[in-house]
Length: 393
Image 1 (cartoon, rainbow, N blue to C red):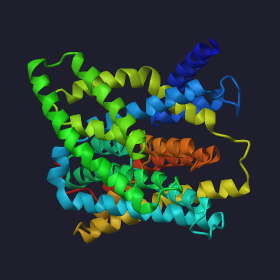
Image 2 (cartoon, one colour):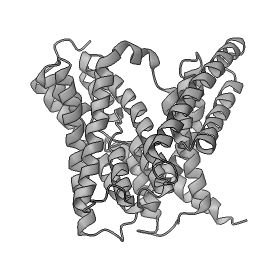
Image 3 (cartoon, rainbow, N blue to C red):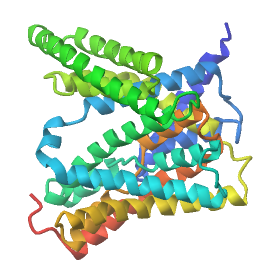
């Protein structure tokens, strides 16, 4: 056994936490600090830790747990209340950035053959831009007292639906990587998985609901939830050719309405916060290669960030205007949906693992997260100062 892995874990955990704390001090997402920590200790800078099969496995477990937690924190009741408006905004917020990201890659790297691997890579780059992370937006709106207003509620609901649609799109795009399976077969597998997950999920939910009533707030419930997460991740990959993170996310959705869903999420957060989360985000930095940075990649990274920000504003803002929001509220919704975070990294990591993305492009994704996290609250504050919402509550 190679005992160096213990040293690698110790270095990752301590540096990730230190830089995570520093990131929070400067009002940046903690994950940004953890990624920078990985970049610092990785081969590109200090070379203290190198990627290994063990770290790859730990990171994969981390991403599965993160997606399970995301599913657990989904508020289905809120989604039902917001109805078609938030769904339409989310759909535009997925479609426009995906098209924009795909075209950006195709133009910069001169991709013309729609049957080539390069075109599949372009589609995947577009897929990364579909994700929305509203943690920064929520904090900014809460500080200004507008979180529970019409605009704030719409942003929150659209972001949740946005991630669900994004995962479905990711599932389909990843299915295209296997050239032995036709697009129709990919669609069939995706539909079949979600149909089976719905039927199985309803049975499991009723079982867990009854058990939760008999034994509330016991450790057996989070253990059963974790087992369901891992089982769904396995079944998704093994029998349907669907991404394991999709299975984990669906497992979270199945349990999100349990009375003890928050208790399950709290227990999952302990593992994610202490070990798996830092390892996953630090591994992004460790895998990021600065050696390959050249003029083309730099131009792509800048365009990637600009397109990512503008397409969310255009897609979500335009749809909000069509749904009878006024111009300023539509702009607020578009700006509020700009931020990218964990889900974009999760999608990128999955693309790397299946060969749809090179590690070089992590630089662009990290740059997007940092820029969007900084300018989104600034723009929201500017918009709300100039055009305050009449009924924030």
